[in-house]
Amino acid sequence: MKMQKLLRVAGFLGALAVMSQTACAKDTLKVGMDPLYAPFSFQTPDGDLTGFDYEISNALCNAIDVKCEIKAIPYEGSVSALQSGQIDTLINTYPMTKERLEQYTMVGPYIRPTARLLVTADSAIDGTEATLKGKVLGIEKSTSANGNRWIYENYGKYMTVQEYDQINDAVLDLKAGRVDAIFGDENQMNFAYVKGHESEFKLAGQSKFIPEYFGEGQGFVLRKGDEKWAKQLRTALDLIVKNGKYEEISKKYFGRNILNN
Image (cartoon, helix red, strand yellow):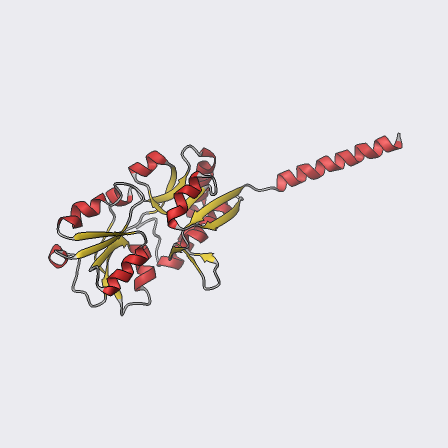
């Protein structure tokens, strides 16, 4: 009899322990981002991942009380990592284009980006057709078939357009004189190539927000139909915008709020 009571007590305590562990367990959001895309995602000299997207991801997870598992995934392997379930979302400045919205579930925008020209510091290019005509323009390959259509329909009328797998490769060719200008994300280029390198590079022409190029902005990419994480990320984004955390992180990297350009 005494033994039965002890067993019942032990069983009760065991059930309480399991319930406690279950209550304390947190969901884990697995986030992927390119480690070579400063200032959005890059590695410190010690190899630690950091950047705007890294800090935004952690802020999102904190806002909805889930664990963040952030993985450095090279750009060329990002989509396969998402589709295979290695990660739950890509948080890395993906434009919310019509084509991408048909293929994936997306949340956002969390950035409303502008595009601009990057040229060498001594370049006479000022963004006008007269200074660009006959020149070579470097761009990063788009992940969508029509992502760079606006560029070809506009600059492509009077320039040769050269595509690169990585913006870093385009910059190397700009330095070497193999391209005359690069057209890309103003936030990224200003931070990575102009800031602190004013003797080498400058931005030229006017800032452009181009819906045909960026869609309605840049958002988080999830597998099609993943409403569980989509719902939580919408809630988290609203929270960090309202409580000022988004603006704090944005000003740290860009000096302004890049959601409200």
